[in-house]
Image 1 (cartoon, rainbow, N blue to C red):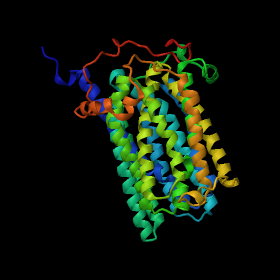
Image 2 (image 1 turned 45 degrees about the horizontal axis):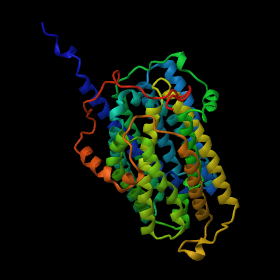
Image 3 (image 1 turned 180 degrees about the horizontal axis):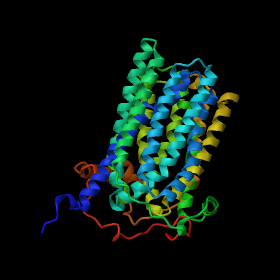
Image 4 (image 1 turned 135 degrees about the horizontal axis):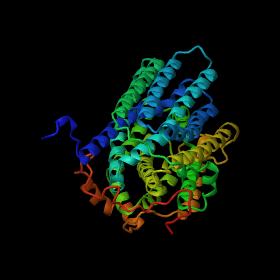
Length: 483
């Protein structure tokens, strides 16, 4: 007797395809929120006439607090076991916070007070994001097979970058039109309302995920103190130090690019949006092939090559204020950061066992949060108390500004971080060897792009099941077994 159709379990491949497709749609909605919301948070602070120090705090204090809340997110997941319900509720909370932020477009508060309230709302928003991050990483890490991970996340990130691009361009057009008609407040209200709607859409797609239960045992618990004690001894710990050093170097300058463009160079919102869009476009270009490269040749080689561009980019800002030049810089920045971020994310999945991954993600985020907050505090102090010791304006076509010195300082510290920390960690998977030159000149990338272009977004290629795949990962809290 045949079983009724309603009780027939779908094939494993079909179920996985659905999960991956849902993840792509959730990511696209979330990315649209980033494009029309978070991307313009700094510009909104400039509109509210916040001080450079406040703008620096807006870019870093919320992320610092959000990083600390990631540890609490791990505790929630371990206590309740469910992941989908937690993520959906927190995402809805973020949508509501965008609704509160848009109320600041019309306020009787002084510029300093209004910017302070904006920082408070941003802290709450990133705190919810801090809860979400380790839970989402745990869930998606259980869904995506290891051998398909680089290609899937590259394709997902490319689609998300496209959604971010649409958000950036659309929001930039709204702000430009509102500025032309001297209604900037309305423009910001519209784009933040769009961000709220996009996050609600993301929450809907998150609710369509299978609620895979998190299996946790006390044998996998370890404290932050124990994690810190292993930083210099384990391969993953040395990777964490590398990422933290890069973030410290980046965030000395990161909050001030928007200030520099809008207040020193006095770019229009259209020009500002165009520069942001240029970076996103180059990310889409890079992500078309870098995922296959990371699957085949490993993540460390990708980070090694992309770190060259990451070090150079901020230094290029001191030579000229030409918008075309800045567009070239943004394009290079997008290429470098797309490859670096994808490889760094995938390295975590490869290097840490699933049971310990949520805590490792949370602890790493806490370390990065300290690095980011410290760097932005230092950058804010330099921006408000120091004079530019290097007269770039005498030699190049740039205005006199302390920000150009901060950009150059950031580039130098990035280079120092790469030289010191990048040689300390190794690839954890068995991958094909390849020289940096072949990656840079794209000999392998062109072939990979052609292969990858014909693959469906969420299709799993024939491969081993999770149970059959060899596990060469290291336990992040034990001695490095990859030597």
